[in-house]
Image (cartoon, rainbow, N blue to C red; front, side, top):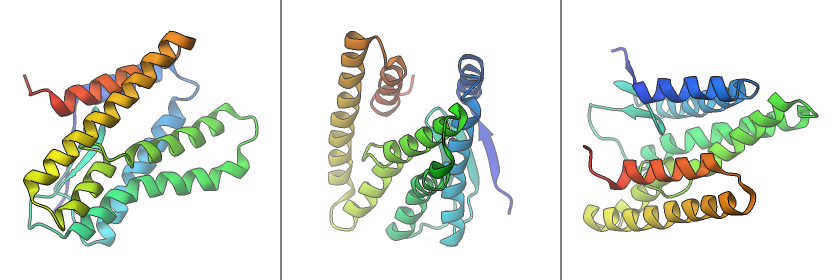
Length: 191
């Protein structure tokens, strides 16, 4: 069975904004994100998981599996695949990054994407890993409460850092927008 790919309008909008406002580094960002998602797909294949759908949305891609449930261990392996691919690609490219803006940008975005995705925030890879590990010992309701709490604290921290950076050095608008968007997606009900 072939997997279906769904692309959201917001994903296309963000891609176009990136290409327009950052044409020098857009290829580095797109390559880092592509490697991340390919890492997830490779990990899924290694675990014997065939995705039914691949959704491209605001916070990246989601692999949807409609068939039978798989183990928490396979969930962790599939989730770690993306950040691991980013860390490996950053490690491989680092010795070749001298003064090239594109190379340095790719290294930075790969490393940042890997680290950010490992945070235990709901709907991030780290949140799914954290949830899977907790579900081995705790009830789903308890895990949901813990994940909501940690997500709120971490997103609030990201937002606070972005506000501080905006006020101190007029920088980090992207971190501010990102943290507000993540908070809205996770904690506000769909309109």
